[in-house]
Length: 313
Image (cartoon, rainbow, N blue to C red):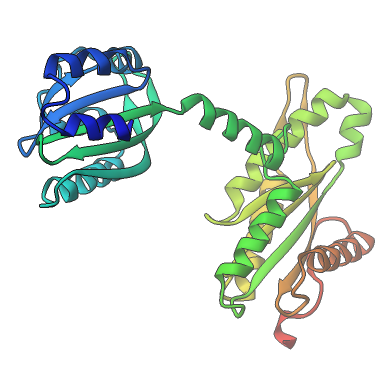
């Protein structure tokens, strides 16, 4: 593409009519605008097929950006990149590096596009190329969900917990307290045994949503397996923050759960450990939260317990 445009930049190499014919046959969606006014002079067949807009529907590049880029960040970034090249006094060909945007199509769908551009200074032309990567991004998203989400509840799984923990260690100063909660349902086995596994699955979905509703924005709720869940609580400030969340979780999970056949109830026992007091390692923090959890269950079901006294640190 660049070699072809370098030829086009030499005014005597191709006539405008020849250039239009060639560009119209290219499989990539492409538009062409005059500079510096930004008036759109041409869109090729692939552009019309990809987005559903006909030639002439958007008079200028700015009108196109304003009309079909639904995200403000995309609009701002596209304008910034094009403005930099339009005002650049250089000669020859200047390129806009690829970046991703979302584009609203005529039929109301939104496509993920890898956008790049080229300015031919001698010809006063800006050319934009749009590569539809929607299917690729959807496949990547589906693979990520498969790798990092629990398929029943939609919560994060162990892999996501480990990844978030690694990111937390990379970005934190190492001084902010982080809490790890381990939650085990009380009374869940009886639901599976007496009503059936379908009822058990529905119960777990309700529990998952109640856990999401009980924690703070930024906390990560995970299903560890069976009826065991974990919560990663970064930057808790003080141990009282954990106490409030544990009480909220306990209160939410004791409310009746309405299933298709009947109403059921479960409870929750919770163990809590603290970074950096109890360990710097995620697996050790989980193990120590588990110790606190089963001390609690051995004493009495329900409620929550620290692995160690946070005030002793």
